[in-house]
Image (cartoon, rainbow, N blue to C red):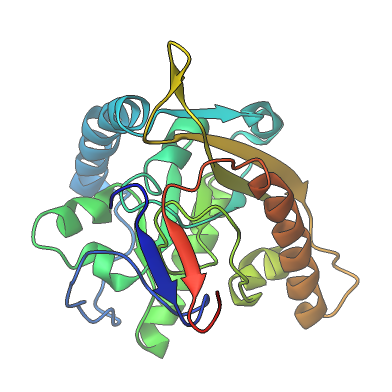
Length: 263
């Protein structure tokens, strides 16, 4: 997408602007979530540490002009397991950037089945941390069990509560509290990261593409004295507020989004 492009939207919670058109596979009881044992563990190490991690660094630094501030807040929580929520604004950067600021921890991502359905990349995604949403009850049991295992193992589970990709969007879209059920049930800590789009200069001249600057906030803990429904809403509201505050640091609108029916 080019600078100056305008996108008209109808529903900020359901409109999708990713360019990919993929027919998803069915995630049923036969889908294997766990790739951490035996030869699968060897394949995961190769794809995750040998291939994906250095490529993520090169791509984010060279093409996205990326940097992260405040990653130090994560340091006391290494090897303890937590949930990570972020805004969904980059087709290729979103699954890469958390691996940079959370390094050397293992990061897993809750994703749409599209992400494991592509012929080659989908296969690799299964080994580098993609956890596709289930399509039936039996798969849901395996899905929940695997997430709990990862958190108990001290890993990070990343979630994009906005669900749909809006490239270069500079605000935070309203999202539900549905995905906050995981930490609300377990009592585990939550962090959020906000990717902002800021002006980039070279020799005093503003360049076309913005740089991405990520801010991390937390930890947020669920109030276990509240009901489950109230815990989810409370967590969602605190994360949403923190992300909205950080989004105000964006000062470059590379792509303009306008709601249909408004000026």
